[in-house]
Image (tube, rainbow, N blue to C red; front, side):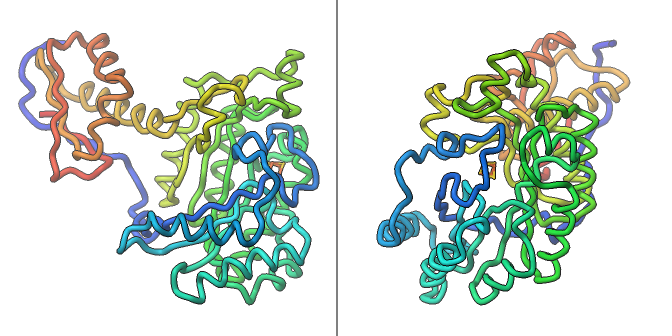
Length: 362
Ligand code: SF4
């Protein structure tokens, strides 16, 4: 490409649906309570929930939970709203009825005294039925997250989930009828799945119009059944590069539909960080950042390519919050652009007039 002057500025923005209502809802302050593997009818092949949450001890007593919640509340900034107590790491509505009620009652104490605004939990789609929803109707539960993982019944069966895609569709309908805020979690890289399958799952999830989603890459976790398949050669995980690119395509699909992606990649715990728990798979402590960086790299390439001529040096303007996404981890995006176009100098310059997902070449 001819290296002369760019005579005009090029501005690019990630396309979204413009559904500001859903995209701009404030992020809740979450007080996480891990209930590892609680209420699970069995262990799904990819899961060893004890390892993932880093919680190896037996479950905390109500008194310990109260202390835990009070400690967490100390970190809340004055104007941070809404505050939610979240039960994660198991199959909440798969617990015994008495245990569900006692945990909800404990959390409700904090809602009643005004310190917390609501409760959320994650559960399997097949636990959402009229009976279970009737049981929790008097508690201030605002958000329910479903571990959907896939909308392909063959992939679900291979993963040992024990529920179908239809269970998810029915669960979402029931939750909508009762006006819960709904989060759906999906996975990429499951056995029997591929890019087309994962994009189809994303489309079907998008069609269900949840309030938010999470995207998790499948990791081979020690003491899971998937670890046995991996060791025997029956399962090969996708690479980090594939995982990031696939998560990017899915993220952009949700963004276009106006559905917020609140997390990409596993929440790290000390176990995951010291490398003892994850045996293989596309794990990276900054997985979400890698996805956003690849999006910015794509935007920069697209802007450069659409210029008739390019200079020997390049200035990329981005919102101050997006500088590290544009630069990439350890300046990897800058290196890639230099390698591709042999710029003598690339400057990434903050510009507050630009939106967080926008860039401009100057
Ligand atoms: S994936 Fe969810 S339902 Fe399956 S074993 Fe783990 S915590 Fe339980």
